[in-house]
Image 1 (cartoon, rainbow, N blue to C red):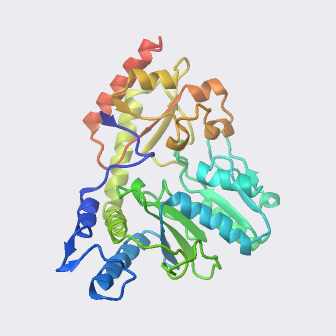
Image 2 (image 1 turned 90 degrees about the vertical axis):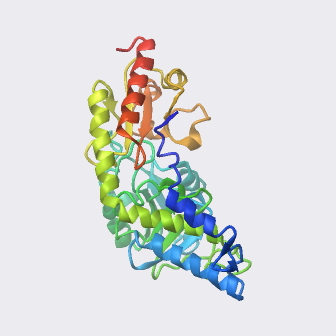
Image 3 (image 1 turned 180 degrees about the vertical axis):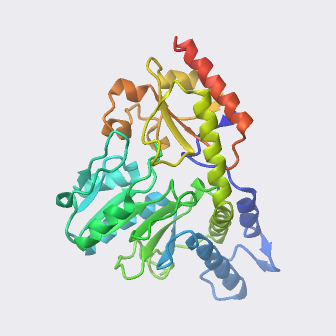
Length: 363
């Protein structure tokens, strides 16, 4: 199978795997499985590994904040929204195209929903929709169509009204620069070739965020629960590799974008072609049934949208928020590639998709 679903998850980097394996047995003659909260030598070694990983993850984020490890970005987003609004209680706002992990929190909090244009980019800031002493949620790169959002503009507008800006940077972390204006940033390891089951919330210095969980006072009293040196080390190694390969990865995905456009020129791009991450190509073609296309091209791993909503049968809320009809949304597919995608694989996969579309009478 050829894998073109990098927005759902990415292959584990060999370097991340090696970093994790070190903390599953014995390292430097001490039990590497030790609890990093323990004060004996093995515990201190485990704690040191966690801090090394924290620094590696933080290196891709603004310098004026602190990284707190979580079980993933979903937890980080829930923490930021439900806990920050205790202190910043003036209201909440967020984009209509946010990931479900944010959007469902916004619904619970009865937030104002901010519109996007037909290209999937947040419209010019409307001060009337920005809460006073509240929280504004805005993703950096949309997970379905790849559009890059004007996070800094909305951060400036939020700060002018004494509100915080929460940035879901899951699809952008390690791929594009993180805006300095964000007050909280949620990220995930498995989208940058790290392990599943770990993410982080970055919190800017001076932001008063209540703890997520109480108990053992881990993560500086902000998130109780035993920390996994293994998962942290895998995340850290993946982040260090992303920093090292930042330019090369960007050039590679850009090259593959142009290859894909040359092979599928008749398909329409969903979302802005200029303000986007080019490792995400969401496209549509009149007459195509996306679900059937996935069945007919079953040896190609691609998607119709977010993996979180793939089993619901519902039309993409992102595409509908961009003004597309249900028919247009159902004729759309999402292709994603990255560091380990080979050009020959991509060409073969896109040829197979074209052939599958022809079975539906689309040339």
